[in-house]
Image 1 (cartoon, rainbow over the protein chains, first blue to last red):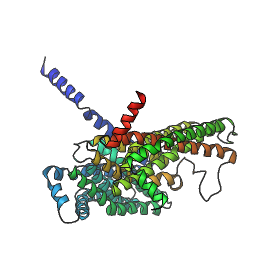
Image 2: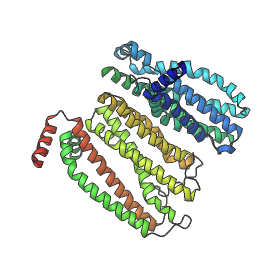
Image 3: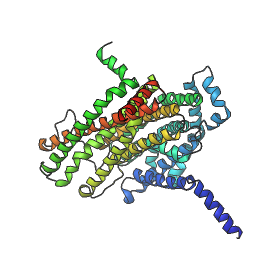
Image 4: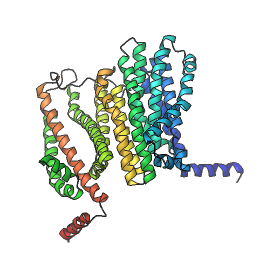
Length: 223
Length: 253
């Protein structure tokens, strides 16, 4: 047997024993395709603006999901989390602070790249404002939900599909509202409601999700 | 303590629940199946055809109750999750375990019957608009709750994680509910709304109401049936479960 056959068989067998290696890319393929198709209004005949808005929103969503998926994983493994949970100060504030910092690290640079993306995708200049405004709220919500998903799956092992299954259903309503606001602005309909909606969700996420995340962190140390 | 709070506290006790729920399961099954049969035969056979949609509108008699009930079950799971988080009531967790499967099946059925209905009336089975998408999201939320329970080995931690996810997922419910009013969509606005004149003829309305009541009763029966099983499994180490099992063995021997 030559080297090719040996390597081929070995890798094939490894892949067979770790089905997630092929399921992960499949899930990713399906998820991205359906997210894009549900955000583009008008299907194949959609305008260039609608395409640009949909692509930027979906890309921001995916990058935020990946960035926040590893939250607290390092702290869980090296024991920092135990210190955080057992300290005297409020765990709520600790969680809120660390998620806020996470937003600054991962989402803030992305927002700075949004004008570049909008320029690359030929988005009309008058739509940049609404897109940017809605993406600010969207990135906050995506970061908080992403960290929530990461805490839910803490200690279960790196499982991208599970994280996506848990987090994406929470992302989609926000995605619909955000893209809806931009599209309604484009077609000169009333967009205020949808825009206020995502900012309201962002405020609620900042206020209430740290409670949920803190409770999950505490229970991850108890059992 | 008045009657209501006493019953509420008693229902939180697994042995009391296990014994008390048996008769309810039987009656809810009888009422539910009976009403569903009457409503379905009435709706399919004895109502006039729709002026615009012809006979295809008749799928409303299963589509609307299933869709409506699946949302209600989601909300009920979220409320149970809240109760579990705050008071750590065992029965709330048992309810969450029992209701997720039914909720997932009902959501899947609502989507399926919607596709079947959409083909003759919209000319397409599926559109990516706010209503259909948010109901699909609800299906994935149910699947997420199921998978999360399986994925976390520790049952206490799993219960807490499921409760948190269920509560956060409530964000999707207003989107489903109001998507037909806020967004441009093919789906029609609800025909029956509180405070508005009813947008459906009474000859078509009655079988719908009968079917809705039937499905509600049947769903309550199914959930109670599974709750009795799960409560036995959850409390398998306790004295009263041993008694129950011993009695059952005695009956059959």
